[in-house]
Image (cartoon, rainbow, N blue to C red; front, side):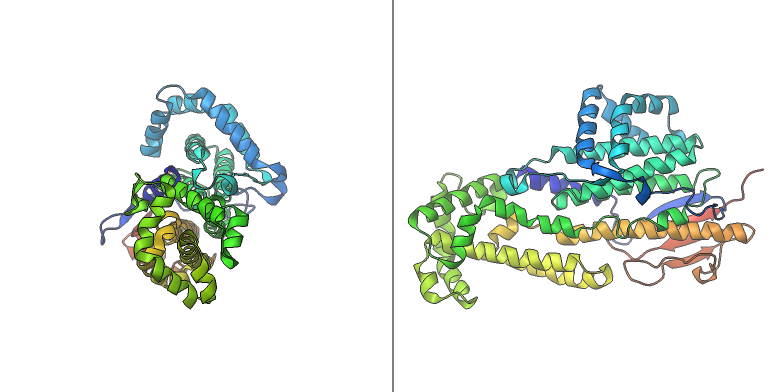
Length: 469
């Protein structure tokens, strides 16, 4: 697997790292105070208002921020940052955190400006470089997300709610813009940064004198991260590896010997970049053309029959060079699966989850077949991406429900409702994974909210305590 695909896998694993055993739920316990409606309702925002946005390109400012971050980077700074965020919010060493943030002050200022630009045009050269494209900025932007969340944590502890809201709005806006930067890997990095911000919002809700954030959460874009653009961009990996004129010619005509040799060379280079797992039985000892002969021995005749069955004239297929037959069948299988994955990525999760389950099964079957070579090398894990997006969307909906409960408690002498149906001050969101109500029960003074399981099972336990005199 090439470096980019390993990076994508690392991101997916990071997003799934909280997964527990099959029947074990990850429990988040929050002890919070009642909190009524702020005046005005959007006195605090968790996403920049349209009136704040100015013309310009955010990507350039984010790249500038990365350079400024790399100019600082004192030894151990990244480790210290990770330690800050892994500790409970109340244990944050404020002086040390302030020192860390001061070192990155200029970089954070650039990010704050970038998050209020109308566009983020990244211009990542995937179409030109294909699978060789490096994406080092993705890791740096995840680090920027951690810095922003650390800043928000310190501001919350200092009681500076306006500043905290602005910092978290910067984080969530950056997350969305990063997700729009290119392939699916970028979307997953955007999800990871947004999850950091939501975890800090949980800490905020549990802090003293926390304002009610129901309306601030309600105005977030829905979905906050849209995976469709990232999945569609996956088509560019292949388009970059085979020149467009050659790719077009091989669809409808017989390639010349030179064209076939060029195609074999392109395919061989793709195998080399993909690495040992993707080669299967292809030997690194052979030339690109020689590599193609190994699968040709087993699948050439089968591929010809499949291309003819798919509607191509038999005389055209029979006249094609071996490399063309092989590549056409690999490309056809890859594109068909990718198009299907894009289709399901565009559907609401309650509808899409059944289609994705069937798609995953089909993907496994095709990938295990001779025609599935490109699919094995290039197709993303659409199911994992879809679940990552839904888990993020669920988290936002659950936090809105928690804030609705705090609002109810503020209007009912600090008491939580026996059922969500009793909450009438604001609409209680449904579980976006099912379209139905969250599982809810009241145990003594603790409300338990449990969404449907998507990637892993999680639940929130909210206890309301009156504000101290």
